[in-house]
Structures are given as C-alpha cells and as structure tokens.
Length: 436
Image (tube, rainbow, N blue to C red; front, side, top):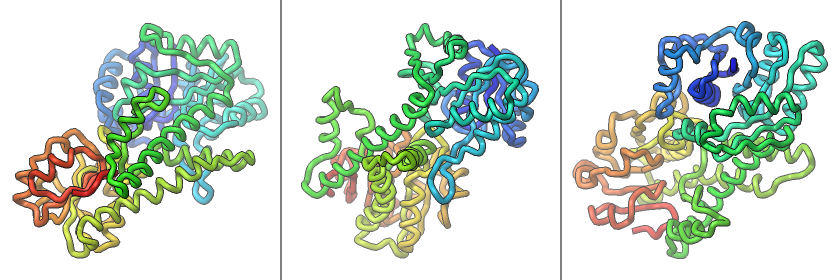
C-alpha cells in the first residue's frame, strides 16, 4: 500500500518506519525543512532505541522516504495518517487542533480517488466529525473516509509496542475504510494482534480514557507512598501486594515524582476540558491533574528537607532529566519543577542525563551540565535520582562517598534498597519508605 504520514515527530516517524518495515511504501511529510533535511542525511531527530536502524533499512529498501511537499505523495496514497501535534491550548487547556484541521484541508485538496484519512494524533471526541464536516462542505467532490486510529506507544519501547500491540483500535463504520485498515495492519496478523473496530467517537475516547486511567493509577500509588512515609510502611511492598490481584495488576504502581511526558499531562487536561464542555465533569481526573502538579514541587521540598531544611549555597547533583528512561523527551518532566524548586531555594544545581541534556537546555534555568554521575557528584551536598536510567542502577557508592561533601542520596524512583545505600554510610531518602 502507498501510505503518507503527515507529521514526522515522535508518533509519525515511529509509525511510518514500522509500517515500512511491514512492506508498505511510506512517505513521511513535515513542514520543518530542518527536520526533513536531517532525515534525508540519515540523522534521526529523536532518541528511540532501534528507530535509526529501522529507518536506515527501509530507506535502503526503497520503502521509506521523506518530503516537505504534501500534495504529490497524497495524490498517490491509499491511506493518509494525520500525526501532527495537539498541544494544550494556551489559556484554557483544551487540545489545540489547529494543526490537525490545517493538515486535513491540505490533504483533501490533494487526494485523488477514494482515500482513507486517519487521525493518529490524540484528538478529543468529535474531531473526526469536524474533519468529515470540513471535507463535506469545503471539498464535496472528494471521496474520503475519516477514521480514528489512536496510538498507544510508550516512549523507549515504541517499536515493540507498534509491532506487538495489546490492541489496535480503529474507529469507523464505513465498510470500505474497514477493509483498507485491515490491509494496513494485515502484517500483524501473524502476531495475533487484536484489531478492535468501533465507532469513531468511541475510538477517540478510548485513547483519552486509557491515558487518564493510567495517570490516575500512578497518582494513587503516589498518595499511598505519602501515607507509607507517615505510618512506617513500605510502598513497594504495598504495590506488590495489591498488584498481585489480577483485577488491579502491577503495572503503573511505581511511586515516584509524578508523571510527565508528551501524553499524560496534556491528555488528562484535555479529557477534563471535554467532560466539562459536555456538562459531565470528571472529578477523579480533575483531582489527578491537581495532585500531580503539586507532587512535582513537593519532590523539590523533599530534597530540601533531606538537606537539613535548606539548600542555599549547597551543591545538588541531579541524575536524570527526561520524564522517563530511554527517551530524550523533556516535555513536562518532573525534573523541571524539582530543579526550579532547588534553584528557588538558592542551590547550585549540577545535572546529568544520558540523552536529555540538549533538550533540557531550552527548559532549565541556570544549571551546570556534567559528563557523568561522578563528575557532578564531586563536592555535592546531595545526589537526587530523578530518572531511572539503567546506568544509574549500579552506581559506585564507595567512590561517590569519597568525593561528595555530604553523603546524602534522595532516591525519587526507589531504584536502590535502603540497606544498599546506608551500608556505605549515606543518609537515604526514598519515596514511600521510612527515612534511614
């Protein structure tokens, strides 16, 4: 099949590369000349394990190419995916759909023959209806079916998620579009990937409901962690104990500094706004958003408390900046708020992240960037573990203690057992555990 992916950001690039790997011919389109030029040179603008190899392989095979021009590839396409950004709109928190509607109009002007237009971007309920209205009123002569096909990719594991998905949700009641979408994903039948067909509005809501539920689960265990600290319980053991119940499950029950990234913050907010517009407020998700916003700043206060109540004039070493490991994504990362709290408290903040420091420079204040954990820990009054990168899982605490000014570790991801750190003479502060 000839497929065009409008938007060569995280979702568009991963989806396009993986669909090319299935044997389809994919053209990834983007208005950013710098991004397309970089991709043409073989430079991948995002960090996602394994993505560069898949792109290189499929470009060599002639199944994947890139374009700044939308019209020519869309005219030849069987399917056009819209994978542009839907950031939170300034002022009211609704999803900004201006990029989606602009792309839809350009696509409609360029299509020839029957074409399936698929929203891959995360969009509020009713967006497909609005796109269909635009096509019907502004391009009445075009034969286009509008389909919802939300993505469920985890950054850092996106290729595995695309090729071995839990489910593929497809929202359409058009028989022709149904057959086209079956053909798009036919290569996944060998993996027994379940295609779940439903109404378009239902499909749009499934994406938001899934992310909101997971965000709520994270927030729940974070509140349990706070209670654990007060009563002397261990949140990791509580999480294991409740996670063994199959109705609950053990995923997303890891206490930490709050959720971040490109999905949960904006999707929970967009769902709240949509629910309010339909006079059906979602109190649980509203509270989840509020708790998570407060939690990030509270983690900054936790670090300050670990430093005897003040970080003024003290050097704090922060390990991990991205919102999760195996990505360079800094969007709504807890580290941003935590570091700001430390800077507000007068700390000299030194940071290190394996992949996120370039992106962080646009978001963080006056911090010092280091080359490795040991460099930034030299003379430090505390080490703060914010992101659980693999290379932070086996730190040499003997070496760290010999170079640090004060042996204090604030482990916001509960990477290390308490005994592991305290036996080296460190003061240990974890999440949801009694302080040692």
